[in-house]
Image (cartoon, rainbow, N blue to C red):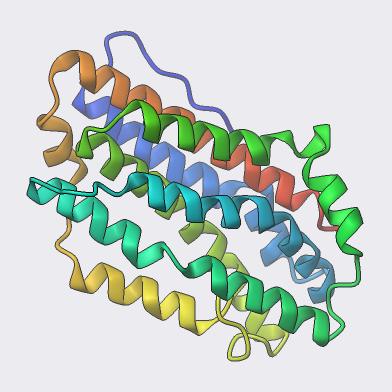
Length: 238
């Protein structure tokens, strides 16, 4: 569900864009199909291989986010967030191996790779390219923290609906990325790091930069929403 900017966007608009982005992700067809009791659990798991491009590219994005010599509290906060998430891709690969051993994912790797780079799955790649582009374009830590906020919302919406699926499949305690290990790490991440209010971050930007930050936040929410729709298309509806 695409969100468009109003003319002369202000502080209220970025808060509205974030609220809209979160609600759109919750209402995405992916969330609905994962929560649909009429869809077979194994069918719901068919979307997992399609996460490969995003999860493995996310590793590189986290490396790009980090400042080698942070000079401010905000740069240190960016580094802390990026370091916390830097190795989650390893959990993902282990989960793919576990699912394959259990015989749950049955599609050959060549088929999955072909699909990942197909035209129909372009929104998955576009989301990654856009995020990487914004990281390269904006070294200001406020932009980067806002970007992290959006990405975390994308994962959060997915995890909230995939978690019950994993529990129903009796996989929640066996898997790392899709199980309690990742979710507990995210919870600890939130507890141990000082919360940074979006409104406080936004105030630190000059007016032209506020417009750019709002455009970035809106664009990335829309791209993640489109990516989630691609994941949903791998799940056979009831």
